[in-house]
Structure formats: structure tokens, C-alpha cells
Amino acid sequence: MSRLLVVLLLSVAGCWAKRNGTDTIDFCAEYADCMGRANQKSAECLADNATAAASSGKEFCEGALELHKALQALYDEKNEHVEICVRERMPEAANLSHRKLEKCRTAMRKVKRDMAEKRQKRKEKREKKEKPKSCAREAKRMRWQCAKIAKCCSVVKDCNVKSSEHDQIAEKKKELKQLYSTCNVGEKKKLNRKNEKQGGEENKEKKAKDEKPHKKQQKEQKKKNKEEENLSAAKEQKQAALDNTKIVKELPPAKV
Image 1 (cartoon, rainbow, N blue to C red):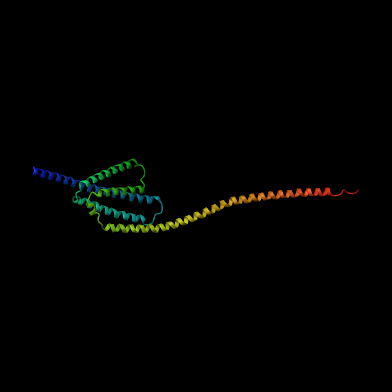
Image 2 (spheres, helix red, strand yellow):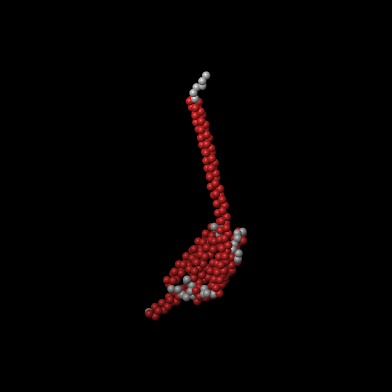
């Protein structure tokens, strides 16, 4: 009886290990597929950005687009390397504990559900033009979902070790930052000159507006002063006439 129980337990353990191993491989395969979709989306975003930059007619920082392309190419190369490595080494992935396995299954279902909902939204808004910024956000969100699945596949960490692409990516990022810093200095100078010019024009307009009511007030005051002068002159004439009449009355009558 005890021997039969041992055989039964070994069989159950073997089935569990086999099922666990199959699930682990599924997680690794799903991660590789996820990375493939994210890489494709990033390439689409870069193409959209290049098209938008060419058709907009706006001035861009010289050399920035080329650096972006080079940086994206390095990212694609790195991600492709990780994807291939994971596919090749997925049989080596470590088995997961029961608790970890359940967490990974839940995460997998959520990722697939989110992707299905996103596809439906894109289908509903297909006629609307997707902006480059929203495209970049979507690519970033896809990589974030891939990172969730990566926790369920142990070989991802081994495949994602520091390589030559990491150093090249860091160098390109540094170059891009310096380039934008230089361009921003020039843009700030242009903006300052523009603001100074606008400020000068605004000051002229303000001065002209301030002078208008001042001139009007001067005109009104001048008119008022004229009226007061006329009134004063009229009073003086009237007073002079009264004085003359009084003098005439006070004169003695003429002798005949």
C-alpha cells in the first residue's frame, strides 16, 4: 500500500513538474512574441516621426533625426538579440513555484486582455490619424507589458546582460542630449530676440494709447481755459460799462 502511494505521489509530482515546465516555456515564448510586437511598433513610430518631420516644414535641430534613427537601430538590435536568445534558451528556464505560477498566469491573462482592448480601440479610431506622441506612448506601454512577462521567464535576465549595444546606446543618448542642449541655446536666443521685439512694439502701442487720452485732456483743458478767459473778459467789459454809467451820473449838470 505504501509502495503504491509513493508511486502515485511520484506520478503526480512528475505531472506537475511537466505542466510547470510547459507553462514556463509558454511564458518565455509569450515574452519573445511581446518583444517582437514592441520592436515593430517602435519602428512604425520612428517612420511616422520621420514622415511628420519631413512634411511639417518646421525647423528641427540639425542632426537630431539622424541620431534618433541610429539610437532606434541600436535598440532594435539589442531587443532582437534578447528575443532570439530567449527563444533559444527557453527550455533552460527554471520551474516556478505554485504561487509564482498563479501570479504569472494572472499577469498573462491581464496582458492579453489589455492588448485585445487596445486593438479594438485602434479599430474604432482607424480613420483618425495617430499622432507621433501617442504612437511612442503605445510602444512604451507595450514594453512595460513585456517587462511584466519577463519576471515569469528566468532566462530573460541572462539574455539581457550588458552587451556592446548598451554602451553604444548610452553614448548616442549622451550625444543627443548635448545636441539638444546646443540647439536649445540657439532657440532661447531667438525667442529672447522675438520677445524683445514684441515687447518694444507693445511699449510703443502702449505709449501711443497713453498719449491719446493725454492729448484729448490737453485739448479739453485748452478749450475750458479759453471759455474762462472769454467769460472773464465779458465780466470786465460789463463792469467797465457799469463804472462808466456811474461816473456819468455823478457828473454835475452842465451850466447853460
